[in-house]
Length: 412
Image 1 (tube, rainbow, N blue to C red):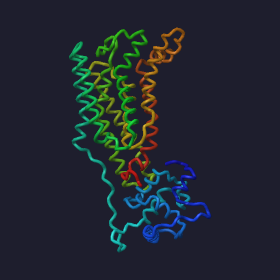
Image 2: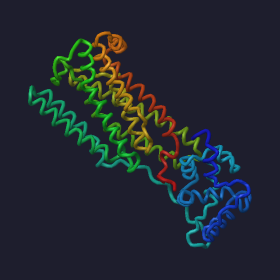
Image 3: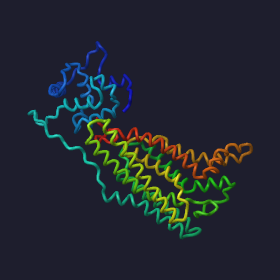
Image 4: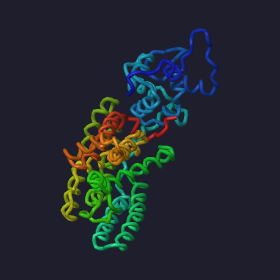
């Protein structure tokens, strides 16, 4: 919840006008309905210049469709109403204001004064067999491609890798289009979606080829294209990428667990602060669970393929991708985190190449020192780790708020 709000926006939300300016006349039907609702609600009679009544008019659909005061509080918070705004309505916080709005809104269905029974909150999403199987598809395709590349040589290996990448892209698209990892319609603009896909593909490509390329560049190469072997002139890191592909299923299941548990907390909480206090450890626990599963997958893939598991770079990249998708699923922008991580990785290779120019050796010094001290994997680990920490900070501030989990979508 924002700590402060612009005075102009607060006036717009409350519908207040400067002294001396008469309010616009209300339509007879709306006036009759809302005045009858106000007379039934608790609290003192405010008269014609009732600011709470003006707020009810402005958020009429939200107040009529809400199943409890917390849903109204979530909608108000999403529209910029803060505790400071609520104080102007003589309430201590947004939830107290929402309780009055919920009590004063007319809910009579037949006009006889009998209020219908309170509807049940929207049920938490359940796991379905279709999306469960789809989340397993990228891992199965990735394992088949890894085996095919290992069993072939020369041109067949190149053809197998190219066909495998295309099939893997299709499988990942199916897994991300439905189920817990699906982004709600119109949640983000198409250019943002395209940019996110491009940066994600770059980060995965660097995880596959980047460390080998950086080591080769630091040694004076490269002298040729990668052969697909882990110990060739341009080594390819297959184990970390295979583990990340296999982790698509744990990412979907972790997101499902978090979303379902947050919905249950939203239905049971009696205030925004109570909801935030319950959801924050849930978010951190889900995040830690995913990292634990990813660590296990890295160990298994490294042992099966006889390669280095690349824990630092793979774990930070997996954390970054999960947090970015989790924010997108809950209709929250991820910011430039993916782009900055990809740009940092590209800049590391570019600086080493630029250092070969006469008099420019100093450009490669930071990357060279970092690689000598911690290995080539320190570059993606530092880039992705910094971006993941930024997204984790954002997630703990936004995914613990009720508007991110409210089922009403647009309160208006």
